[in-house]
Amino acid sequence: MTGTTPQLGPATLAGTMPATPEGTATRWVLDPRTAVVLLLAASVTIMAPDGIWFVPAALVAGVLLAILERAWRRAIGLPLAAGAAAALTYLLPMAVPSPVFGLVGVLAGFALRLVAVGGIAAHLVRTIPPTRLIAALRSARVPMAFTVSGAVLLRFVPTIVAETRAVYDAMRLRGLGGWWAMLRHPVRSIEYFMVPLMASSLRAAGDLSASSLLRGLGSEARPTSMHPPRFGPADAVAAVVAVILAAATLLWRSGQ
Amino acid sequence: MTVETTEHRIDFRMTPKDLINIGIFGALYLVTVGIFNLLEFINPVATLVGVLVGIVAAGIPFMLFLTRVRHAGMVTVFAVIVNGFMLLIGSPPIGLVIGVAAALVAEVLLWLGRYRSRQMSVLAYSVFSAWFMGMFYPLFYARAEFLSSPYMKEMGAEYVQQLDTLLSPAVLIIFDLSTLVFGLIGGVLGLRLLDKHFRKAGLV
Image (cartoon, rainbow over all chains, first blue to last red; front, side, top):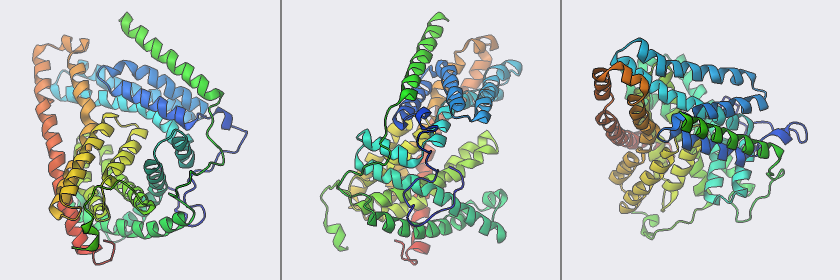
């Protein structure tokens, strides 16, 4: 979630990303439900014991998704980052036999798993605007308590990130910022940072919640969606590719 | 004792206002945790420091959130959407399980304090912070896997022994317990700042 200017007013709960134009690339974008299931499958298998076996499959899936999205930098960066983490995990402890580097190796192994899951997560974050995600969760019968509060959360994160920048700039202007000050007076720095951040965020929150209540957020009636989520050919292809990758991993593992 | 505290029954019905409050404070909580975790880009050791400082700092929005909680279920919904967001950006799924379990314990503590006890709200934040443990659980498996890998067999028993003590489960358990302790510190700091700033500004 990177910097977007907070917009108060009619666009309150609309996503902060521009909606994809109908008809052009939309057919080859995954349905949010598919993307979430894919991410959960990768995350559960990789973070489980012995999950390291599934890292290559998740990396392939991440690179394919990046290519689908035409995010070339990620398509190249993902294998490079994973390669660096794998080198630290397996080659470094062999080259330098010391427990300290062994510790680095274990941490790098953890980072390798995070990179593998992160490739799929990055696709989800970059291609699915909050409104589509919420509409998909609603059609997957997730209870209203979670969809409404989740929608508010996703809407507020960019606003608060913008406020954070403003507070940090104001601190720098008064000579209060910087990591050194943070380390010398941690509690005071937290106070100087958090109090203005919360005060200004809550002021914006008051306006936004009044506006969204007026437009029927959280009403009993089930909201309809302008573009109802539908499964398309992209989802079928993604499911087939995921099954092939999982089968290949299991075969490779039993062959070792 | 105000009028609201007379309602002691367990009530799960949420008003839209409750749900909006959960979303707003969830976002504030996540951004706070995220900013202090940016420390990890300095070096890996700073990751742990960043997490612990983040727990303390995130106590402030959480304690302010608790002043607006008046019935059961809100902390659980908060935990589900915060941990669900973490899941979507790639953190281990066990975090969601631990987070919801911790939130249920926090709910009980809050209910025991009739949603207005200051001591209980500090304890509730400390327990709620336990979800941070979930982020590091895969280190347990990664460790066992790493120590038993073929590469390690070549390194010799002594080396493996040294690495084992450096990364012992005891170290990880101490980290887990420290999330609770830092949660207490965060809760107390949050309460202090509520009294010092937010009550005056009419935000409580």
